[in-house]
Length: 96
Image 1 (cartoon, helix red, strand yellow):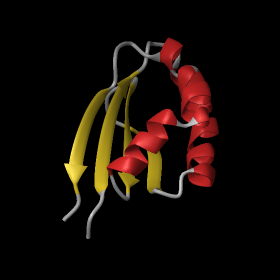
Image 2: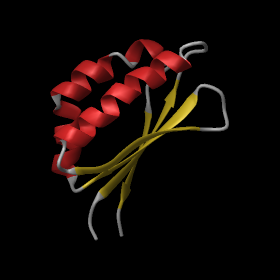
Image 3: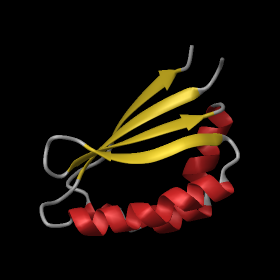
Image 4: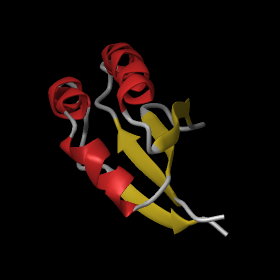
């Protein structure tokens, strides 16, 4: 099986967790509805306050690029920025 997995670690500013989760709740359904090459896109809280992980699964590199270039990611995703305490850490994995 081919495919690309991504684990994005996002650190949110103190007190902005609820706002961040609300924006992500808009983004996730837009990804599901508009990205045929994405099969999984879900936000998880970690045990550390304000630290989240997004687990993502794409068919191929083209699907990853389509996600980054999509209107919904650019518009809704831009609302996540003011909540973040730094740049996301992205880990890219190859499916086996």
